[in-house]
Amino acid sequence: MHIKSLFHIDHPNAIQFVTFRTQESIRYYLQNNHADKANSAAKQQFEMDKVLDLSKEGAILNTEVIELLMQYLLSKNNSLYNLVAVSIMPNHVHIMFEQLVPLTKIMQHIKGASSLLINRHLGRSGVLWDKSYYDKIVRSEEQFRITYEYIKNNAYKAELADASKRFYGIYE
Image (cartoon, rainbow, N blue to C red; front, side, top):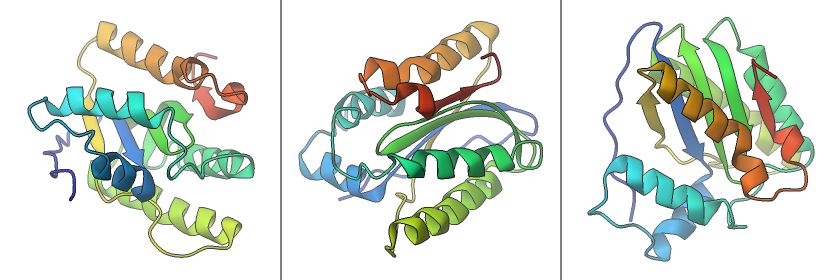
């Protein structure tokens, strides 16, 4: 069982909103029949967020791993992308950026390098991130504002005690 690959729109200098998840969390979500194939991709992502924000499955993005991942994402600012905002949830990441290179290259770098860093830190090996990711080009100022606020408030809405450590935004 897997989530159908989504079509990715890649455009130079586009503002992208991307969500990617730990493989364990996706496996849990799909095995428990949460997926409703009749919903649009955006609706599926919203429903998945609601379930996985409260799930402990694949929730390894905690304590020192938050800082490790945040530092890695910040280190790629101005080379792969211009970072706008990021929220590191226990089992997934929401990130908004202006892409400077092709989206596939950005995601390969982020997921590949962070997987190695996190696995090394936790003394584990194997696949960390699910191969798929959800991306949406931000097309208006209103959509930008809504997306930024969503990312900013995601950890607070999930009532995570360490919510302030999980967010970075250029306007804060």
